[in-house]
Structures are given as structure tokens and as C-alpha cells.
Length: 345
Image (tube, rainbow, N blue to C red; front, side, top):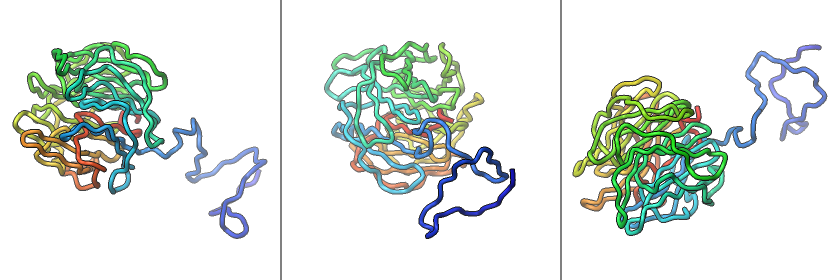
């Protein structure tokens, strides 16, 4: 076997590369790595999908952006249900949207799914163990986990501490996981590849952060506290750091961003502020480098925004402008998901 060193291989006119065949052994000292694994895992990830909520009308349209870019969102398609306060979780290929309620109709337990690489097309996945709105969502690469929530008119029910989970690769109903440490609704969630985090929520407004080990089943454990007690906010993460953005402790709207180190326990630390002010229900979706904060809503007085802002997760500081959603409207307290979030490593 002989060694050879080449900077570039092309055809004669330089318009394309060549095919290499018949080599029994190949080695090198530089960074060549051949693709492996399922096709859908080989790059092309980094997409955030936002499920628009209300502001003041209820929307079924959804948007997407490529997180690594800067610019306005593009329509992703139409959701199958008109709902608000649904929660979303994402694998590298699928997003699951679960629960929620329309303003004048019953809450539901239905979960739908979509394919990130498509531009729309929602299909029935199954049902939560209990119909509810305002859950927090987290995930690893195989499980989508939903915690907390409450009923809605015309069939109100108290807040719950239930945690359910789905398996991304299948369809079917959720399985009971355990319980969070408090009954709450309109919570935020985020993940590392091993841990899921649930934070804040209403009735009463609280600053509690819980954690679970996603591949186990059991009750959540206390992690620490947010910097500000609030609900109607959202969470996102890379593999190490979780961020919580926006929120409401009526009548005060917050544009604060908190962060935690997911592998540890302890209280959250101030990160900075979102670009959106005077609103809550801003949705968060992340890659391993960026956190995006989309939309927002306030009903007293009625204020909505289509602003998307972003921050670099490894730093601290205020978010800056990314672009706009296609329509003005709230994303919902956790109606955002990505195919490159912290739960996927």
C-alpha cells in the first residue's frame, strides 16, 4: 500500500468531483469522515417550527426558520387543530404537538406530529393520558415528555402534576411517567440528552424548577428556583445550558431570560432580556449554539408581536433581532420545537 496526498479531485473541466472505487484500504491524517447512520440524521438539521397561538384570534398557521440564519419566518403549513397553549417537543426528524384548547371549546388530549424536513402536513399521533393545556415539554432523542397542565372552559379542571411521555418513532397514546413536585399550568420545559426540566407556572405563580431523568420513570426532583416567579413562558436548551424566556405574573409581563446548567442543580442566573417587551407567551426553540424567542401576547391591553429575537446560548446578554413571523400572534407558552435542541445532544 502506498500513501498519496491530494488537495482536490475533480473531473477534467473542474465542474464535479470524481468517484473513487476499488480501494480496499483508505487512511489519512486530516479531517475526512465518511457519512454514516440513517439518511435523515446526516446534516440538514437546525430548523425551528413555531405553532402560533392567539393574538387575539386563534391561528392554525405555523412558521419555520433555519436557526443558523437571520431573516423572516416562512409558512410551514396548517395545523390540524385550532388550539392555544399546546406544547411541542422535537426529535431530529419529528415534532410532537400535544394538548391545548381553543378559547371557546373543550380542552383536548390529542397529540399530532409533523416532519421537520417537510413544509407542513400534520398527522394524528395519539393522546395524552389526560386532556389539558399549558404543559411543559422536554425530550431526548427517543422520548417526548409533557408535564403539568390544567383544564379550560367549558370543562375546567384543576392544575395537574401528571407527567406523560410518547415514543417519537411510533404512534400511539402516552404512557404515565410520574409527577412533578407541584400542580401547575403554563410551565416551561427544556432538556439535555439525559435530563428534562420543568419550570414555573400558575396557581399559584411559582419559581420552582424540577428535573427528571428522561429514560427512567418516576417523580421529578427539585432543581432550584427561577430568578422571577412566572408562568406563560417558554424554555429551550443546548446539551448543557437551559434558558427560560418571557413570562407573566399578572399584571406584570417579563422579558427576562434565565439560564441554568442542566447537569447540576441550583438556582437560575440572569442571562439578559428578550427583544420583545410588554408581552408573555414568547416561544423558545434552540440549536446547540442559538436560542430563538418568537412572538408574544398580552391581553390587557391587547398587544401582540411577530418579532423573533435570538441569543448565543454559551454567552450572556440581551437578545437581538432575528426577523419576523409571517403573522402577528403568540406562539403559546411552549409551542415551539426544533430538530437540533439540547435533548438531542
